[in-house]
Length: 194
Image (cartoon, rainbow, N blue to C red; front, top):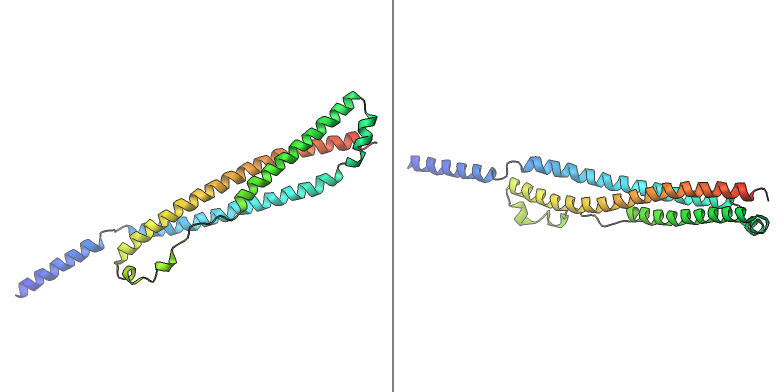
């Protein structure tokens, strides 16, 4: 009888060991998932920070460049200049208009990168669920790894879209700033002496 009890205990221990070892790497993967979740949140902050900085630059460009261009003398310049001067003045104005359009595109793309999109978060409402609390530790860790994987996949997609928008906005900003500088300098040189 004692021998049967010992065998039953041995089988129960073996069963428990099998059940506990069902997901032996769950702890490691959960730690990696938590680390990646933190990195993805940091990535969100970095992307939004860059977008915010470049939006501020675009506003600064408008407030600096537009007042220094002598728009009030354009009518006089068109009447005074010869045909070549009028063509050069028109080209400079077209380049400026192109740069303003590019700055608008840059602003739109940067705003797409900055605007708040709902990121997936841990579903905390079920953390106090009795059926989950009754599960083995490894099973819960396994479920959390799966949950974090869903969150990370969704958040990475959102961040990639934001990063692409910010990258396009930065490219448009650089090109627009170059064209605006070129046209502003040209207009100041041409009209400044009138």
